[in-house]
Length: 113
Length: 114
Image (cartoon, rainbow over all chains, first blue to last red; front, top):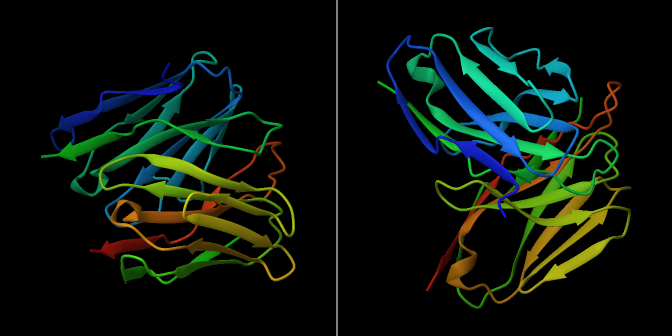
């Protein structure tokens, strides 16, 4: 009965080789978030979707893109990963009118070689 | 923009002792969240504090919110080793887009020594 699912859990990619991370949810939540978390740091919001409306953070590099083809799925594309993009990537969801809780997926650990 | 600060950043404590983690935030946030993160894992929701004066308790952890002081605390009672983790607080300002953006504190890495 997993509610927010991320695939893969571990991803190794080569420097400059595009990679896509996947997030799906069974909660039917309107909002989906992508966070980047580096070791010993707080999660950093990259962008979020409110339904189909995309909201990019001002300091999110252009190298990071996202797609949300439907309510259930959201993808994070890293066009040309650099060594500095190695991190844990966390997907989260919330209902737009319900600030009670944000539900996190298990995360994808990205390694760049 | 909302800024959230936690202290201490690191906390090493003996089992059985009590301690408090503090979370200060800079502007209005009428909701405050606490999360736990184990090494290499995702975030687990601990408490959602919805209004001024809210207090919630779960086991050895108790969280409170004072919106006038812009302060939340996470109190640990009689710590045990299993509580070793990183704890994050997060505030939530409303965005004009109609959604909410969770601003995380720096995190407090807690280590409970046997």
